[in-house]
Length: 487
Image (cartoon, rainbow, N blue to C red):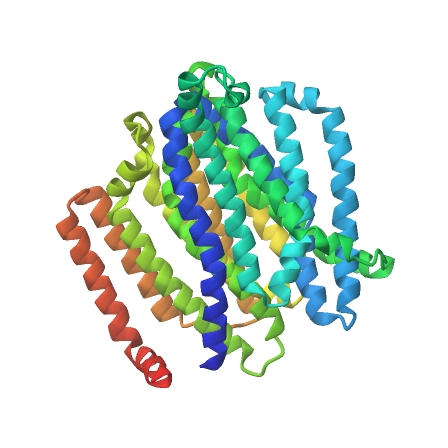
């Protein structure tokens, strides 16, 4: 039990580093949807979607490769040095190239060149802290990791509030003051990216000692092995970006120009309600990924992985049901402008899709531990194909609902394929009877609540209580053992 205690302790801290910033970001959703028209919010979303693709490219699988070789190589300093130097020079090369072609990029994606410039600098600064953050996780320093991550988001939030809410009022009251020089009309999108840039710069400054103390010794042979391991992760990352963000880009292109960005804005705002599941899955992954690698040689490793996955499904199923029951309350809190609410029908699909993705991440341990990352890339490519195909077929007729359907089919297929192949190459004794029952009942209850008794919270709460009792009845012995062990 001490093994699980340490795991969940780290997951809790990493979760705090993920959940608290994302909870703060909820405030930004409120601010952005309150201050931006749907079309402007759509444009912001589209540029952020492009940034996700370049984030994946600039990391090129080196983060996962770092964990793999940090735990398997005796020369851990060599792993840190080689991966840091690799990411540093690739980021600097991208910076000069992207700045040179920024006007071309701006024209291609139909976004103002100022916003593109901000995005380039943000991408580079974020790439430069990938290995320093990975080092903190590998050295099991979750508190430091959490403090820096939370600090980044706090700076971003404070600057967003200042630029979008307080600066306009200050300028009205004192138009000749110094702060008036910082104000520009119709520059809300620019302020959002400027705030992000300053936060990324602050994070880089805090982690810059990693570069100052680095012995710039590059191991070419180790780098080749890391690149060989990481390249399939890059392909998988691009495929994930396709699954998660390409729908926003395609929506703009496939819908009429007059409504394209507005539809993207409404869809993106309601999509944010799926963030609760993303928070849970991300926090779990951050705590679990180093654990999977460091405990892979233990005799009971497979049984441990099976137990962890079962509890992930238990908690995830409860989150799925709870968020869907209270979705219409959450929209009032998060999305002040009612014009965005038209896309609320996508929420159950998006939450379930993110749950499938979380399960897939837990199942994917088999190809990471057996160095079959190519298969992981192939699985992601299958998901990306579903995303592309269904978006192109369904968006013209069903708009963002077609995007939501594409997302859930993509992640559902990836989860299923990974489970089937995992049983073949690295069999893990999952308790499929319980896992299936938890997943199935939560989906059934969520469907009943949202589509038949929507905003009937008496029925919704009753369904949550029934499901919670079902979990307790099935896991009573395990829970009692944990309670006794703590006592």
